[in-house]
Structures are given as structure tokens and as C-alpha cells.
Length: 235
Image (cartoon, rainbow, N blue to C red; front, side):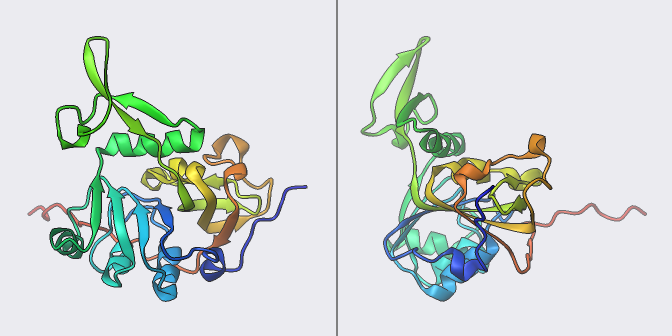
């Protein structure tokens, strides 16, 4: 019989997340972010967090809400250009920032989940990213050594999931979620639709339940669009 990993809500899901912990938060821009858990963390007021996320949301949504409340001590990210408060905190020294090439960030999370401690990549060689890192040559090209990333908690958002923790992501919202789901000591999944085991097509599952410890169905999702671009109406 499959283990039932369901918790009641986001507040119960984030139980155990304490000050100064490291969190991974799935999403790309505002797509596929764990909205309910972020709101619960804001309400809880946990401080001194190190957040690993592709980006930092926008000023009034996503991780941006945690930045407003000064809950984040350090951001490990790739793209942060849509958040003015992030920029202000970084420039004033209030926020420690580790900017990583996007592919390297994804692979560092994936490696952490796969038990690979480090890997060599050409991305970042010859830039500030490479400072202090081992360099080796492969096929005539210099590569730098990057370490894997793991977290105390990984918080991801999926389209559908079952009570055993198996997850299916929808379209672009798949992004960083599968890699991060593997790399947390405890992984929390919030889903739009929660079903019983056997209702998901096994061939469509992106994250097996073995990686997920807690799962719940979110109350509501705003699914805000970061930048709306439309065509002009034709005459």
C-alpha cells in the first residue's frame, strides 16, 4: 500500500522550516512557483533564509514578498532583473547574492539530487564566476568545477499529484521543479489537483513519489503573468 503523504494545507506543509535554513523554491519567473507555501512562509515570518531559486519573483509577488519582509539572507539565483527591492537590498549590502549561469544552476540542483558532489562545466570560465574554482581542460576547452546544491527543504509546485507524492508538471511550469524536488532533504509539493494512487498515468509522471515527503492541494493560484505582451489589433 502506498504511503499517504498528504498534509492539510501550506501552513502544515512548512512545519519545521526554521530560521537560517536553506530552501529551494521551484519556478521560472512567476511560472510554476509554490504560491501557497510562499504566502505561508511570509505569514510565519521565518528569517535568515538562504533561498535557491532561478529568480526572486517581482516586488509584490513570489519570493519578492519574502524579500519585502526581510526574511531572506542570501539568494542563490540566475535571473533577478524584475525585482527592484532585490536590487536595492543587493546594492546596499543587506542581501548576499550568488549569481549563477542558468544552466549551471539547473545542473547543480540536479547533481545534488542525483548524489553527484561536483562537475566540470565551461560556463563561466574567464569571468568572476570562476574565481577561486578549480580549472581543468577537456577536449581542448577549459572547464571550471561547480559543486552540487542541496537544501533543508525543497518546495515545488505541480499541476497534478497523488497522495503517494507522484507529480506531473504542466508545460512551462515544469522548469526547475523536477530538479529541486530531488535535492531537498524534505520536499514539499503543492498541486492544483490531488488524486488517489493509480489515477495518474505512470508514463506521464515527472517526479516519482520517492522524492516527495509532503503534498497538499493548493487553495487558489493567481498565476500572474510577469510581462504581458500582446499584438496590436489589426485594422
